[in-house]
Every structure is written in C-alpha cells, then in structure tokens.
Image (cartoon, rainbow, N blue to C red):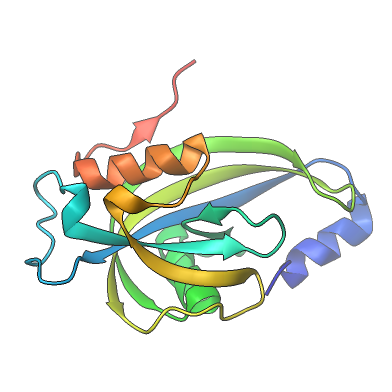
Length: 173
C-alpha cells in the first residue's frame, strides 16, 4: 500500500501543506550462509550477516524496509507490519536503533512531509523476500559488507544495528 487511507483523508483537508508523520525504518538481519546465529550482545561482523534491502519503485534507491506508523500503532509493530507488507517476511524486532527527524520531503505531487523516524534492528524469522505491495521493484538479502549504495541515514542505521550497542542514538543539537 503506497499511501495509507488516513493520510489521503488528511490531505483532502490540508492539501499539500506540511504534514508531521510518524515513520519507521527496520534493519532486518539474518546469519549469512554457514554462519552461526546472530549474537545480539556483541558487535556483528559485516561478513557474518545479510541485510534485507528493498529497491524503491518511486526513486530506484535501495533502502531498508521503511513505512508509516498507523494512528495508535506501536512503532515496533509497525516495523513488523511493514516488513510483511513490503517484503513478505516475518521478523522479530530486537532493539531500538535511533529516533530522528527526516525531512521535510517534497514529493512529486507537491505534498510536503516531515517524519519522526523510529529505527529498529530486527531478525528475519521466515519468508522468501519479494516485492509484495508495489512500493518496491526488488527485494534481496545482501551481505552487510556488500550492501548497495544507500543514503547517510540508512548507512548510519545499518552501522548502529551491527554495533549491537544497546543505547539508541539521538541526533544532538
């Protein structure tokens, strides 16, 4: 689902005016072939895990799974829902990575949105990844040391997930 119904309803009232939205990013990991299960208490070597990436249909960028948190929805549950909706995989959300403001973003149709993004690290449980909802053209696991190019925010989220440092990151003033 590209734009949630509640956002379309809000846009009917406010047009393209700036909109503040809760969002989520989830770095989904699984052990690389032939490697022991992930030890979530120690730094993870990039060659020992694979990370699920999706290629966005709107701009061709590779990213972790992202999405909008529905009204009243817990962000971690939204991350798990988005993983199922976008990539058809089941995950276990393991920990909070960061909370940060993303945007403002102006979309091709003129809508302006700023997101409060809550990023998580998660472990893949099951499912063969596929572009499940039209938001992505490709889905694939990549070894963490062989990821496709991503923007700085997603690169930071992946590095934080691999670090296994339990404290969440917050951008300072």
